[in-house]
Length: 328
Image (cartoon, rainbow, N blue to C red; front, side, top):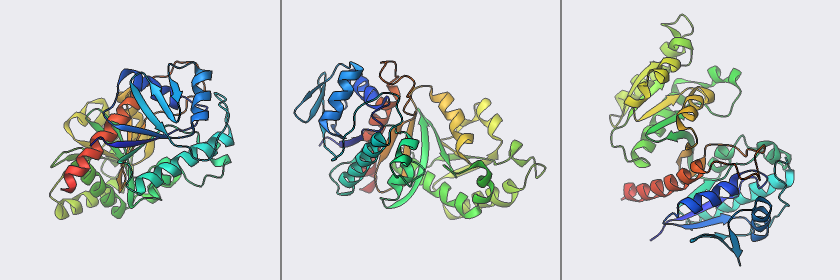
């Protein structure tokens, strides 16, 4: 049976649908693809972006690939590069419908195309990101993992102000993230006994307390307690973040646990170039996303790089398949 993958439309004033069309020109996934957006909006996008795709009834045809379109009851004009609350509302309705379909077990995974957070906030959005929105509507606790090939980086904290990071990181939270990360590496990535590198919070990982005590008082004790509780994975560190990536130590581990958003995402995005994928682990639903934003500056100009979207669809299919095997 082919997996059924739900794709959200993202912000239709950005590059998301262009990336999807280009991805399908290059690669036709062995899956039933569905996008939660009306055919009228997609036709408008295709016409204005001059894409090689057609609408036939409620299906998007890209070469030999077909994407079923499910109307979500909202529409808006495509105005490339414009921050629009109308487009934000459509993006949110698209996610809501996707969550509903997967929650009813009528699909195996969600791939979310990029949205504009300001447009969504203007439309009444109350979440910090798509990860948090999906997490609030699914069982489990969301863990953000950025993937570039065999390099996978998760974060203890995600979308919070930098000034709040140190107070948020606790021994309990680090333990929780280690457990969630190891479970995902085994269940979603097929690694039986993963090796996880843990980064320090402070410069030089605190330098034995010279630059901070979090590594000594919080991070290392959390690692030691998890080692005593769970032997299915091993953790190493805490490592200074700068040297860890610059000297290639990430290549020796199956996953890297960073303490905060930019600490982990900046190096992985450099490594990924144009092919990174955001995976939301720890939930009852499978969700992936291309690792880029709406790129309003180039939207509609046919300049967008689609490879991250291709990888997001492929990885969603792979994780959905591994979860079915893991459950048995």
